Image 1 (tube, rainbow, N blue to C red):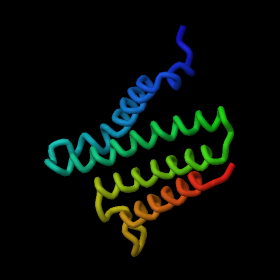
Image 2 (spheres, rainbow, N blue to C red):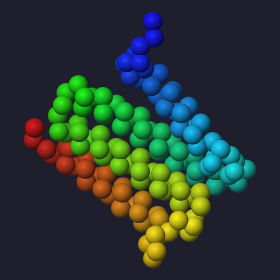
Image 3 (cartoon, helix red, strand yellow):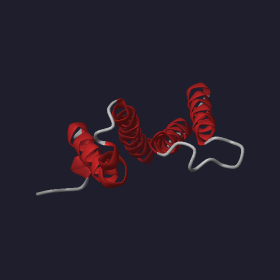
Length: 130
């Protein structure tokens, strides 16, 4: 009998579901229109891979936090969720450069700030004494 919890217990199945889901969501708006753009598609796939790994690790950290309830795991889950946002911002900037700039601040700088915040949250989680 199928149980939804079994997807989380088998990490290979969870990873396959995450990869298929992310690629399916991003296929039409981002991957498809740039499929034959040479090395540009490689850059796009780099960020799609980053989003995929970040979603996978965020799910694992969230379920680990729900079982153990430590603040270190909560900070790690938030950090990896923040990394999803950073990779998504960088993917948008790679796909459509200079279209979604925030006034004088380029979108790539927003991605850098989010990545820096991710590192800060991970550092807080690592050095926290629970």
